[in-house]
Image (cartoon, rainbow, N blue to C red):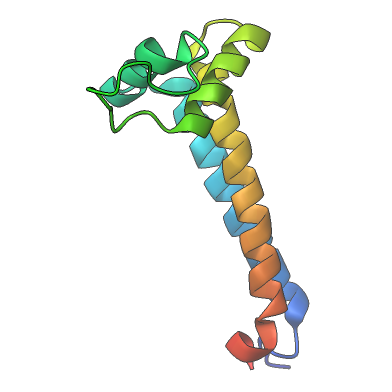
Length: 116
């Protein structure tokens, strides 16, 4: 019986990376759909996502929840998809998919150093 080695059977590594990434993405999407919004998400939505706020109008109060890109994408997602929890988290799920894609590409590019 032939023994499988990782450096010779690279398709096994690619399949493992793909399955792991897909499982992480499904887990994230499942949690985004089934769980209610956290207090932090609601606070960001009410303060910044409900209106298009580019910057703070008063400089005496800055919130740690005002992440500009997140607030803008919440606003645009609300205007396009309506006001529901999945729509507010959609940009985060897309960002997670992009993150997983480029992480897999990086792992495959470094395969000789890691799996040799």
